Amino acid sequence: MNTPDEYATRLADALRIALPRVHPHLISAADKRQIQLTLASFDARGRVCADPSTIAYVAIGAHDAIKECPRGVIPESVAVQHDGELGFIEAVIKHALLLDRMADAKNNELSCVFCYEIAEEFGHAYAKALINANGTTPSAEDIARDTFIAAGENVA
Image 1 (tube, helix red, strand yellow):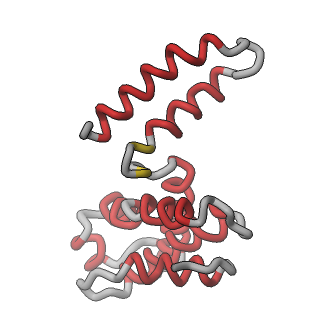
Image 2 (cartoon, helix red, strand yellow):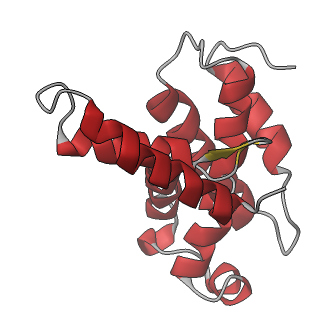
């Protein structure tokens, strides 16, 4: 089986061949890039990387949780544990793929606005859990499930 990078390269090559055959007025350069990003996010096993929008909105939620901390910064003990604020944000956004896979499992038939009601809310909730974790790692799966349920979505 191909690695995700090899598969993404093959998909990108296929797009470079196929897209020019489409009438140029039908697909803009931005649309072509979005198609490439979307196809590169999947391989034969399913999604292999998170959607950039999901990552962005999870980070927004995490940032909002940081703003709620005293003086608007994460506590020093949390900063040390995660090698600073950037490491803290990375510890939150690394779960964006989990959210995308959960949405994919619902065939993206969500009744909520995914970016706002799932991704951003998850980022906020998981960041708060990390801040209050006292050195333990909160369950991203449990927080994701709770976030989907709070948004009115059934999860398996």
